Image 1 (tube, rainbow, N blue to C red):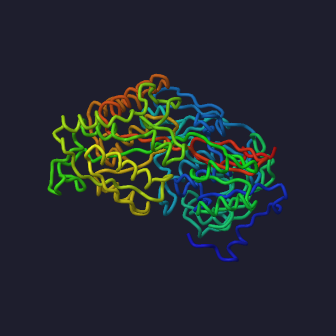
Image 2: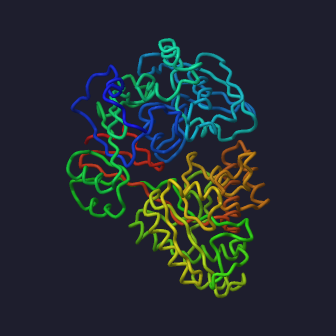
Image 3: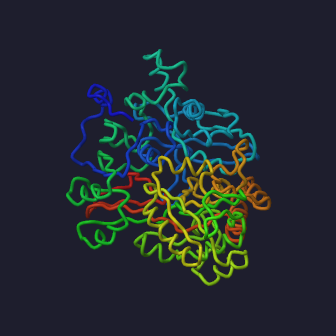
Length: 534
């Protein structure tokens, strides 16, 4: 995004008073690309917008659903949910929060112009919304949607009244209020939520200024104001904290966590994340591009054999990677979410390192001398991603699978991976819903573009039994039953078939100057209304 001109920056300044002395200064690894909460479904934007906009349902620090603008959500039948709205809520401009704002938000999401990653998937199952009374909505879905509440926790509610007033004053801006583009939000005119902070000024790539919303319906933030500064370079971000230029930073480098913990001037906040680092393998093609015999000649794709996939898993020293590469800021993984999250199995611990058994499996599969393979990875997306890939390559080479590593920037890597350009990939997946079923559905269900199945199944793993198990789980309304079925699907798809290979759960790290408290979150969101001064 281009930086705004001086005139445009002045336009972003709203009518709120200047920032008070009681201001929290935050250094972020990345800042928002837009103030439109419906523009770009990406973690950095979603995290920042949660400080300004509310959702019908929120997720707490452990990714459990909690009431927000909706006080309750109840299934009436398989395709109808009743939503009770919170009374007495106002937007930052003083207008009342109403049922019409929910309907407007749902209708606007698919219409946002030029969205690079839309929120449409969270509203696509909604066929109609009926207003029962001022505080009651009934949502009709196209079929059973057991995770509707989780979907409602993924998108922000914006003000219909403010949009109508904006379009009345700027009739050439759009054909309708659902088609108002992000410029109206980025200018500050429509950056109006019901959240704990309101926007006072935004200089893209420089600073987002926020002021406390004293009319907030929830617990009031401790700080009167906040300044959020993107500082992408890890060393520079840490230096800003150490010099006193900022009070709190996110994405503390794992290599520095130890020394910061030992320094009495700072406090480290750590939380196991909802992000699993895993390996995806081409299990579809007979001839896969980055696998050869040891002499370089073509061979039948060994990754199609479950014994080879199990051998790969057993050959990886997860404990060593978590300790030495991740500096202890990771936990070895055997599935996509750790025990304690919904749908996680208690029967899938991280596989123990067993190089001897791995070699036996290779021999059983007809590869006693191993083969050559290339492991592709990003080098700027996950914590220590290239280093983790190199460690895995060393592990695999020791059992006879000569493994090279090819690293590239995330700007090209994920697109190439989605086009099946690779055979063997290091990837990460964070469950935005806080439960494992939807992750299994996205990563391991047979790929079907038309039906949006297996949307992130880059290895094209396909197993009819697994498909049936996860489909049944995700259509089950009863939460306990659904979670049990999702766990069983994980035990089969990951534990038995090794459709993908989990490596570790990445920990989220923040650091603050002594005297600042902060609630770390599994989703890595830096939500500043939890920050306080002791």
